[in-house]
Length: 173
Image (tube, rainbow, N blue to C red; front, side, top):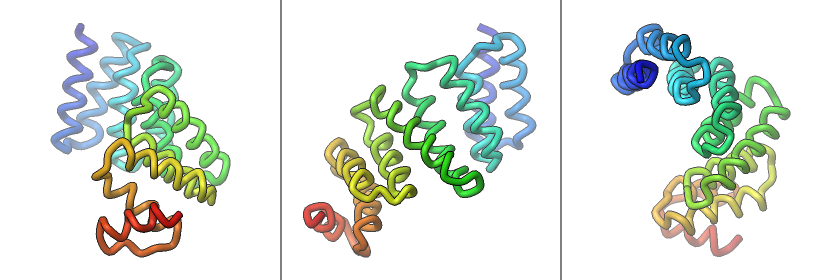
């Protein structure tokens, strides 16, 4: 109960844009009370990511997926962070991002953002067909998912001028 309260305080501090140290302190206290509180690792990971502390975010989301292996959000956050951090760490992290995001898609098959993120991870690996398939899944789940349309257009080489052009790109591919 006390750890959940502290996690809530950390989440609130993160949401209002408090300095890293202020919000982080709440998550640290929560983890001292409940070292296996996956939600505290997720909150701290989101905070670290927001402050561009990607290595710390990776650590937190990895811990969260270990503690909460059936929670798709933990896998989504890990995979998205791996995709971003891959610019610094290279190809192995791109592969891990795809693996994590596939796990998220298995756990949350109806979440358009999961499929969009998976498509982006495939695109980073130059896996065009898989990227387009994932983006198309996002569009099927959420027809107004502008990012997915734009990503399809980027991957297939079209410039998106509007939603109609993105839909054309999807049909042509």
